[in-house]
Image 1 (tube, rainbow, N blue to C red):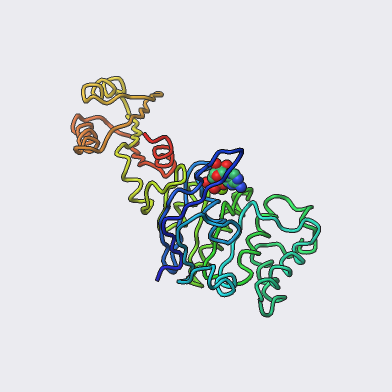
Image 2: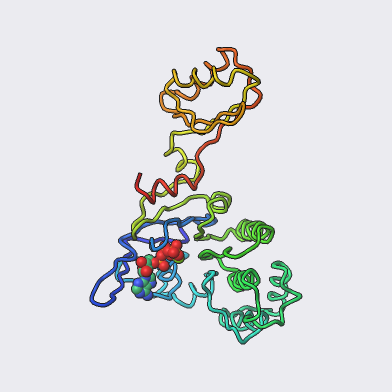
Amino acid sequence: MNYIEVRNLVKTFKERGKTLTAVDGISFSAKKGEIFGLLGPNGAGKSTTINILTGLLEKDSGTIKLLGFEPEKNWEYVKNHCNVATAYSWLSDVLTIRQNLKVYARLYGVKNHEQKINELLELFELKEIADRKVVRLSSGENTRTVLCKGLINDPKVLFLDECTVGLDPDIADKTRTLIKDYQKKNDCTILFTSHYMYEVEQLCDRIAFMSEGKIVRIDTSDNLKRMIKKRTVEIAVKKDVGALKNFLKTEGVDVWFGKGNNLRFEVTTEKDKMYKVISKIFHQGFMLSNLHIQGPTLDDIFIKISRKK
Ligand SMILES: Nc1ncnc2c1ncn2[C@@H]1O[C@H](COP(=O)(O)OP(=O)(O)OP(=O)(O)O)[C@@H](O)[C@H]1O
Ligand SMILES: [Mg+2]
């Protein structure tokens, strides 16, 4: 079953007589238990989409279904089973972490809220500072508080808009594990945006690429990476580095980095070119001390799609 369903969603903003189409007829769906990534350059329309889905903005046209229901018609049910955590959340500065979480627990009608809050504070390592006012928090502590708010009602659909911004690498790693564990345990659906490609790759089952309000492509990260046919090959030889350079030249491969006995070059996998070049290097008798083949990363794909290369 689709827990998130979006069809032909449009949102425009009017500013000083001009109309900006922030979301331009997008359609996508995410199944129960799926982590669905929304990627795209700044201003692509990701947050606008999430703000519409979470009821913060009104759409111009299109249909939305969350947990199989149109939110407008079943607001109470949808609200109680969805939640959002975003780096741009506005927790109350003058309240403490615990007080903020109490407010949201009440809004979401959470039963046993004291216990739930304590569990979340423990999970996100905030127990020690639970009675500190939000205004005094570091950005990482604020981000973790926002994540606690996002999980306060055990949501079945969770929207995470750049929810890991400002976390140090250790906490960011723990946070990704917590998100993944929560998702697995509750079979919840997550719509996830981030500009950190490695975490998108680590967490998301499928990814939709947005650009200028439109979805350009939806696929798994493995399939997206197949869009790029180039590989970077790093090679080190025991001797004869000059002869290897010449050999690569005759094969039509440009060496674009060379230091000592190390060479780095880019070669296409089309028509098996990379496999043929590497196998010829072996057959020529070059004595290799290192061979490393690097495939494209999601960053490469992001850049390729964003620059429309
Ligand atoms: N309330 C608003 N009024 C006018 N324009 C807006 C408003 N909200 C968003 N926009 C514009 O809509 C476009 C999409 O913005 P949005 O915040 O959805 O992008 P995004 O994909 O989330 O970008 P980022 O990666 O920077 O977070 C941008 O050009 C933005 O300036
Ligand atoms: Mg955004």
